[in-house]
Picture 1 (cartoon, one colour):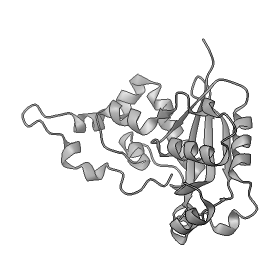
Picture 2 (picture 1 turned 60 degrees about the vertical axis):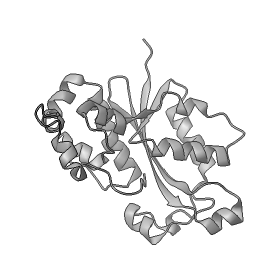
Picture 3 (picture 1 turned 45 degrees about the horizontal axis):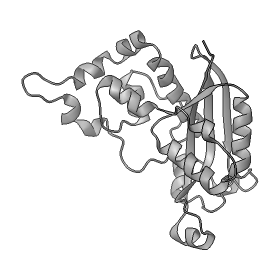
Length: 225
């Protein structure tokens, strides 16, 4: 049996506005400004952490993004560009079999689009093979079909969200905990029993508390990593 490393990633983004897209000719609507990743071995033990800021090529960090992520524009001025950070990230993973996971597919889509824009001459298909959407997997397991926020997923297993949300490494660490739990069906069912009972359809009414009070579980607004 092959030993496959599980790499759990999270990215933070800044926006590329219409004027910037027009001036530069890029198709990107946002850019990655922070990589965060946790590496798990086949037994779901944490064996590595990766965190790097990225200097944007087209976009700017707005006050809104700074307040959300804690990343100020001047923090990125001396950082490496995307292609160099991506190379460091792959070197960190090493020459081994790996599978990437993230909370939702927004990170997948952004990484793919950015590679197409900035690294078109390189083959990075290995990154995307078998990519796991933990948001979907978790929702399917508990019977919730809408988009669940990472913070609410942690609450669903009665686990405190550790650290500040919208910090790439923090979000990756919390997602990694859910990846580990998904690998243990018995523990997953124990930890999510209450939530699964809430979401179970009523035989009489055909409804669930989840459908009645979906706003309590839903992830609002635009995904910002």
